[in-house]
Image (cartoon, rainbow, N blue to C red; front, side, top):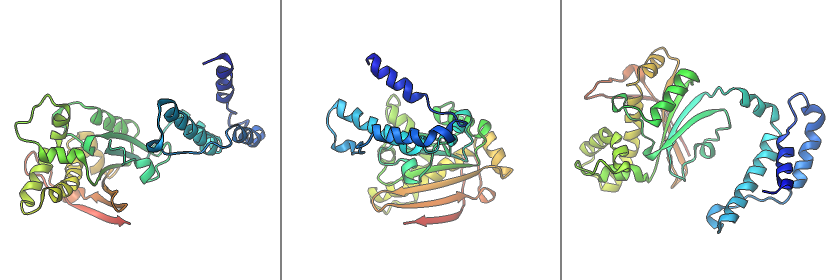
Length: 272
């Protein structure tokens, strides 16, 4: 990067403060709009080459900066000081399932973690990045809702359903999706008459509910749910027909045991 480019970046980074916004904000936005006129957002799937991909990424960033950040400067400067999200979202790492796009979460609204098959391991399984993020969201940020989002055609769930009991434990994927073993057992016991693909669809939803039960194995989550300070929700996105199912775990009707736990749900809704 040459000195001219560095100076431009420094100048762009010197955004007006909240106090300066009234006098400099409008002209500043116009100036940036002119500088970036003609930047059209494209599709990465239709873009070839390393430079072109990052060129597209730059266009998207500048579009966000001009159309969102600058126009809502006071809001974003507030977020720079503190975050107070209402939601903790646990979603699949699948590139087709982006909660911010699907559900419209804006910066500061949801603390998120994404992993293979949107699984929450029980506390007894030990530390993981998932429960570390959960602890921060619940005990520090004190979110009011945890939403576990699954989706159709989940390769992680398909891997779980295909896995043999003696699967190689050194396989990172197998070891992780093994956290959904209880959901697999419940699914196979109830759906022996269904095809494998149909069983996978059932397990995609069953694993969400098992993850909701697993959340209750953490004392600092169970305590806040019991005191009605925290609600646990499930969501299922079907990207084949663009529909979304939402439900809430009914804590008072759940039976959480080491073996033979059961769940009940309420406030079910279907968006299509």
